[in-house]
Amino acid sequence: MSEALKNRVIWDNFREGSKEALEIIYEENYSSLFHYGMKFTPDEHEIKDIIQELFVELINSGTKLSPTNNIRFYLLRAMRNKLIKHLQSAKLLAENSTKNIVNTDFSLFESVENQLIQKEIEEAQRKSILSSINKLSQKQQEIIYLRFYNNMPYQEIADLFEVKIQTVRNLMNRAINSIREDIEDDKINKGLILFALNLSI
Image 1 (cartoon, rainbow, N blue to C red):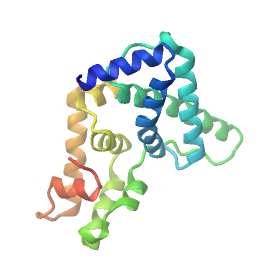
Image 2: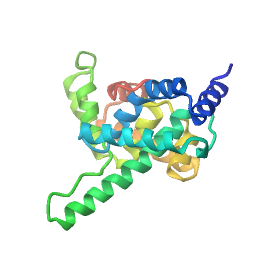
Image 3: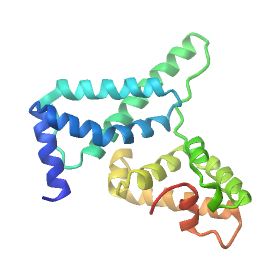
Image 4: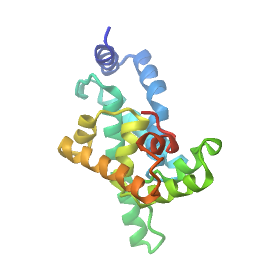
C-alpha cells in the first residue's frame, strides 16, 4: 500500500470516528506540530493547548472534514491557521491592555542554536551561520523549516502559503545564497549550511 493510500485510509477511518486511527494520527504527528508551533512562540503550554484544541475540533468535525491523502500537510496547515489566529488575538489583547506585545514571529534562530553540533563545525563558522540565519526573513525561515525538518515538497509549501511554487523556490534560494554570502567562505557549500542547521537533505 502506498503512503498516500495509507494516509487516506487512516484519515477516512478517523473521520468515521475510529479511536485507533486517532491514536495513530496523534502519535505520528504530535511532535511535528509541537516543534512547528515552537517556532512561533516559546510558550510550550500555549502550543500544547493549541494542539489539543486542534484535535478536539477535528474530532468534533468528523465526516465534515475534507478527505486527504497527506495527513501531515493537512495538520500543519490547520495548525498554522490556528497559531496565527490565536497569536494575533493575543497580540491585540496585549495592545489593548498596554502590556507587552506577544511575539508572533516565526523564528528558527533559537532552535537551531540549541541543536548545532559543536564538534562538527568550527566556532567561527557556527557563529557566522547563526548570525546569517537571524538575518533571514520570517517567511524564509519557515520555508526552510517546512522543507527540511518536515520534508515537505515545494508544491505543498506553496499551497500552505497560497503562492506560486516558483515563489517558494526563489525564497529558498535567496535564503541559502544569503547565508553563503554572509559567511564569505568558499568551503562552505549548501550541504554544510544545512548540516549546520541540523537539517537533513
